[in-house]
Length: 93
Image 1 (tube, one colour):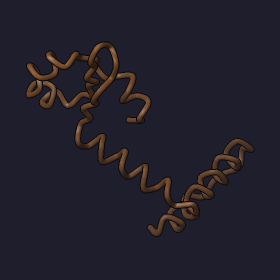
Image 2 (image 1 turned 60 degrees about the vertical axis):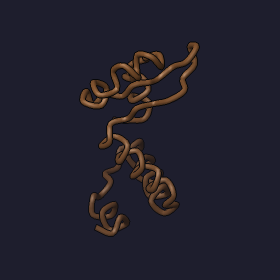
Image 3 (image 1 turned 90 degrees about the vertical axis):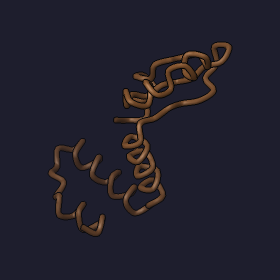
């Protein structure tokens, strides 16, 4: 799930609703946005989704990987094949 889809799928709840239904919110494993006076104040993200977001942030720190992704996108747009072996070797796999 992307960060954008997390935001779109988040169920808005006021603080009192969130407090009253916290155990249900946790069990639902769906993103929730807690609002106070109509403004977001907190965001509940399922654990697995949070791990995915953290992995993505770590990948964004890797300039070499970002360069490779940009190169692959350019080749794809030009109709060229992007060898999986090249990507895997750059990722150390």
